Length: 363
Length: 270
Image 1 (cartoon, each protein chain N blue to C red):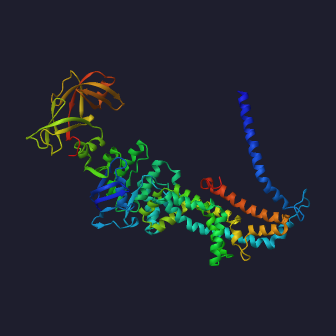
Image 2: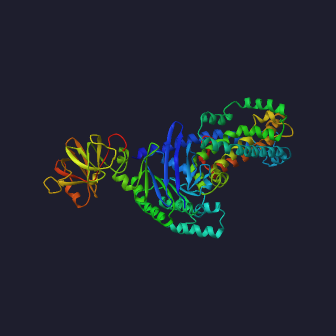
Image 3: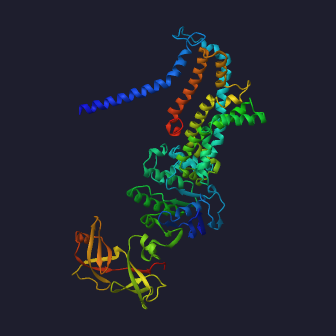
């Protein structure tokens, strides 16, 4: 088992700096996610860790071993490629056996381990097929089996699910999480899909323009984004211009914020001082929507008028005009039916879980 | 409704007649010479008389050594080309660098410049280093002429190949050489074979350059035919020799088209 440490990794392609002094620390057995939009440098980092790309500066350690100059073949990694890269001229068996043959394992051991790996990804009996005879999901499973069968120290996944449809993606997400629990291997997983990241991650690095914008657990990133970029990239958010008020002396970490003519208690941004311009963040799913006359909590309450109402089946999404702002709110659960075709109706909004970040910059 | 259908059928017929006519004109010359190889006589006569295989038997002793020389030259030129071209194709598709397009154009240029300039250049060079009338001298000359025909399908094959396949082999513990031999080479195989066969045909039939560089010890079939023509004119024996060369060429072309498919011949023979 192996921990991975990346120190100040930098890589440029011509004038474009793809990775700008990024440091990561993935503990032994952890599943870390590099999450970010395309072109943010996340795949480049993974390729550097695998030795498929050469860094311009910085160091990569497996445990305490510096691996900068170790060729890919000797890094003992498993790499799952975005385009799968199954060898089209080899049968499933030979694809999965490839790594074991490179290790010169005895024939019967190879046969046994290939069988075991195919059983693990729930594809027993597919040994004699060619990759082109398999569906997308099956190819994915073969690629996964080929990656894990050699028992590598570290698993590196480069957006392996991005080519699959949503249903299959969900299925394989669970599978990858299950495999990680079973094998306990250090895993670094690159994706641009926040849902995928949250479903499987112990730790997430959000990347933007070649830098790590924020690292933390899925809950950290969701509840206390450190920058407007993270707040916008992870899920949907309302950004409400506000002014910081006094800190709450009784509750550590809470700060009063003035917005929309009200005062809200919010979390986050330790460095914010009273009077600073800030952004108040509220998730649509953290806004309770009540009919105007209904009884409910009086704190953090706002009155507005519904401007847009979209019913998707599982939820109803509203845009509510509150003074000069438009707030997005999501109604899940049985109440969603009450707001179908509700444009123009007056409602009362109840904001819970407000967070605050500096306007225009990081925390 | 009916008239539309009739017009469409007439249109199809017109295209058929046009293409049929075109192909007939193109092939008439080949077919005429081919047909004459089966008739008696000392010159081409019309109408032909006396069906026979004697023409073929008469040329065996002189023509076959020349034919063998051409087959060997074509094959060796193809192999030399293959060894030189695969690494070139790899570098040209895997790496991007300044002046890449220009380099690409240069590699594909040899069959776009006048053949005579290449021939005279080689003649000047070979006469100095003593490579005139040598087997390897001719092989190298043919390798130069046929390189574009090799490089084009090889480049296409590399271009079609997902680079992550080779990378996958590395991550599974294969060294660079091993990965190339076990994964990359089999997958570019059809392109390489297409290039090999194309090089072979071009090298086998080449005349313009080799006429300057050949000698009595190394006499290829195309030059042998030329010499025959000068001495005896167009005879049924000459026709028989030409027919044999045509058959070899068509056989290779058939393999190319049927076995390898058109993907790797794009822009070369199609």
